[in-house]
Structure formats: C-alpha cells, structure tokens
Image (cartoon, helix red, strand yellow):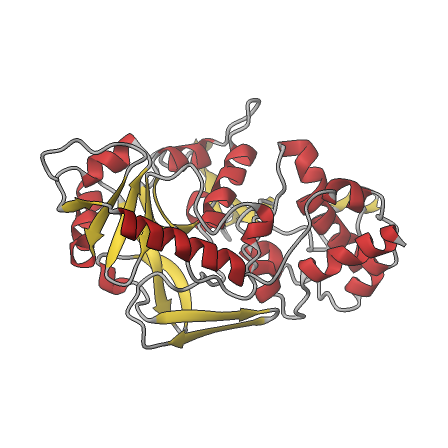
Length: 373
C-alpha cells in the first residue's frame, strides 16, 4: 500500500512488529513519544521508545479506593486502564515557572524560554481525549488564551486507543466519551490479538503512516473491532444518569447528604490531582536567602484545600461538606453553564484514588431518589 494515498477517515492494518517504525517516524519529526509504562508496581506516563516499553500482558484492577496492576498471560500491549497519571501533567504541568526577578543594580525580569516541548501521546483513551478537549476550552477561550498551554497543545500529536477492556470503575459510556475515541486524534488504534487497526484522523497522521507496510482493513477485522467495542460497552457496570445533573445539584445544595459524604471525605484533594479535567492553580513566590532573587511559579491547587477559598475577611468554604459540594456541583453542574459541557469524562480516577472510596456514581443518585419521593 506504500504507493497508494492514504485517506483521512480510513482504517488500515499494521502488523505489531512494524509499530516501532511508527514511533521512529514520530521521533524523526521531533516528537517526544510519551506512553504508559510499569514503574514501582503501577502505571505512569513517561518517555517510551519502542512497543516493548508498554505494559504488555498487564491489566489493572480498579475499584473504589483500590488499584492493582496484574500481569496476565495475554500478549496485548494496550489492555491496561491508566493509573493515577493523566495527560494534563504534560499540557498543564503541576509546576510552571512564570518569571524570575534578579537584583543587580536594579531589579531585572527574566522570562522563561517560549519554546515548549513537542509531545506525541501514545495510547490516549476516549475519555482522556475528551478531557484534553475540555481543558482546551478552559485554557484557550475566546477572551483569553494561556500561551504555555496553547503552545504545547498546538505541538501535540495524539494516537488514541479504542478501549476494548474497561475496568470496573469506568463509566465512559454514561458520559458518551468512550469506549471508542471520538474526533480529535491524529491516529486511532484498535488492538486485536495479532494486528493493530489504525484509523487516520488528520493530515499529520496520514503523513506519519505514508509509506509504511499497511494493509487494507477487511470487513472481518473491522467487524472484530466493532464487536470488541460493543462488548466493552456492555461490560461497564457503573452508570451515571446525566439527563438532569445541573438542575438536580442546583436544587439540592442544602441536602443533608452533603454532610453524610463529608463524614467520609478527608478533603485530601486526591480526586482533583488525578482528575484529567480539574484545573485549579495558585501562584507561589520563593526568594533566596540574600533577597537578590525571587521566582514566581504556577502550581496545581485544589478546591479541597482549605486555603484555596480563603479571602480577605474569612473563608468562603470552611467546611469539608461545602468544599465537596463545590467540587461535585461544579464538575457536574455549573461547568455546563461556563463551558457548555460536563467536567467529568467517566474515567473513574476520582473513585479509584479516593482513600475513602467515595464513588460519585453512588452519591449522585441519592439526590435523585429524594427528588422522586
């Protein structure tokens, strides 16, 4: 197929042994290839060079407050469901230098380099792709665009993954973000036992694949992929009714169930740190001991931190129940008013990495049942 022009929207077959050629082509184009790998018995997103860097044969057991990475007998590379890491750490880093002031004869301002890394994300799930697009709306608004985020985003290449083996904490079907990745990828991959299916989503994706040893996808392999996606959707047992969420939460801001949740919530902020869409941040100034240099950085913050809502005159959310209510009612309610979409993509990270095992898919229906009564 090397002499034929690949078409955007078409799907092709790539032998697994040829996948490293794709990674090499991305590297030649100046991309730093990032993917999931096993480290300290968990999954992290880090630099990858070959297909062998991926967690072949692994699956991740996920329940409320529980994550375990398990090695199995299968030989597939993308059956895992991601751990605590999300892609936002590369587009919206947890710590970013904004400027440095140095005192010589006078104070001088030094700005960081405007050059930003050029990433290729390998293995972006449908829910994660939706999360990236949600953060696009946050950081690249019509009235203001964050220059650091925008540059990293413009440089980004996305190879998404159609998810055939969801974990127990997943509920992307409820949020309409998976298991098949939606629009916005350069290439989309479906892993079958023997081959990869690659769908071309952009001109850059077409350019990377052009000339590679691809085969036309037959009806048989396309049907196998479709059946796998349908089976994955049926396997998801967690659900969240999204039909009336903004109204439901707005009408129940004084519901006693918020206090019941607060009795379990530690206000640790773990859910916001692992969430792929949360974007709260603060600025931190540090100075050297001689008082000749000071640096300002943007750092991740959380609406669960008691100091986050502190203002002159007092704290607007001094209790755990008020902070949890703020987080959930924003994520599933007022986010729609602000950005036209929910702030949740159904990845289940907040459920899995909550040390108290609080599950929003179980908490939200309590408000709805009382509404029916």
